[in-house]
Length: 571
Image 1 (cartoon, rainbow, N blue to C red):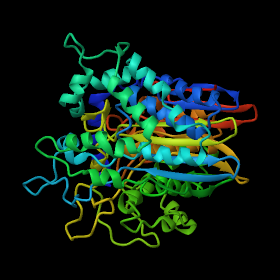
Image 2: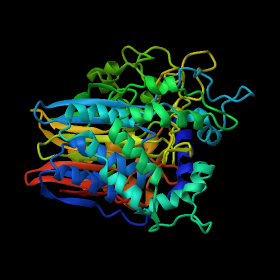
Image 3: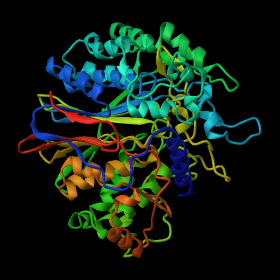
Image 4: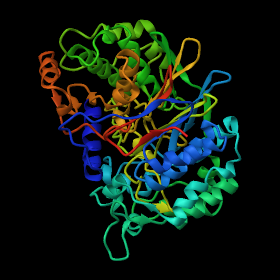
């Protein structure tokens, strides 16, 4: 599990430089939308929420509103997601009760090689240098994926979904706190010429929270997307600008016009498994669905539901997380390129055997198991960083969109085209393609391959196929733990969504337990330490940004992570 440890440390270093951390002196106050609504949007910025609500008021579906929310998030939260990034969407159709997973993950260029992130010395590149290089950018997929989902589930015209993003970009918007903090941070992506120009005012100072920022180039881009669809990004003048931008500098990328034109999002049935009286649905590999579902499968073999927010409850949560991460890091990659043993990982007998490894006291470390269908795999050398957002939309008909969206790191690669940042998603691949004996890494670089992702947008149903809840989070590799925590809080500990989101975060790796230590009571900390779980601050990767919606007898009730700037509101 050493690679996961390094991942979390590196992610923490970058995010610590980029974004303000909430105080850990007191538990955060839950941000909740009261029950009683028939439709709702929960997202990381109020301006994006309002864009989605306007679409819902106009008679749009959850798929329609998701397009509007993403278009505004890319403007007001560019450190997290945008038109130049990728996304995973899980969509519930209330009429058919079907849950579909949409894969908008970026793809590597046709010219990519397994040693894409090696230097001339034959060694892996420094992570920061790789991020801001042209090599880090893959063909963007978020807009094409949303276009696919909206065609399948939308009611409004595509061209009418970008008005709020265009208006805010043209007229200007107040700079949010997190955007301002990231722009003034020491993150390498805030330093390239494009980012410096965008974030520097006429007097030579950096933008501050509350300043009015205009982005006419972004307005022009969304007008073009509204008219032409995703083709506006993947072909023509914007595509040419993207290719030119990634080829700048000492380490140019190989992304080509052919790569962009060839990009296709994917749709498939969501990966769904029963959990107690529920059915939990997430996107399949290369997303985080297999990991979250394996952890739930392990927990189903425990009595965690009887221990809400107690020493024993958190102990079981931590040990299931360790076991899940060990397997996820070893076996999950793009199933179009490697055999991902999803069925073996989720097999009831296999997760029961994994659960038996949870003793009364934590073992010093854990190792990956050997699920059915797993071949030899090298230890993982992925160094996943954090720059992501999650939102949920429920419409008046009961359709639900749960979407996690990203440019990978803070401001992606720091390079801009058409008013938006390009992703650095390819640095989510394993920097080392093999181990010393030549065994392949599941997440090694390959032409046209999608990098592994921790993104885990979840939708929960009852056994009759009715919507129960939806939730997800940003957080780099910690996404799986954040989403799992919220699901345990709602489904096992019977907490309101907002309270489950506000629970302390704990990310358990091979031999460490990164946590919001001061949010655990002294009694909980002492009890966990007695069981071999010593909580440690300082390397918990990007803080959570959980957003969720649940069904109550009175109607919908939402929750937004108090660690961020989001809200959950009804039309």
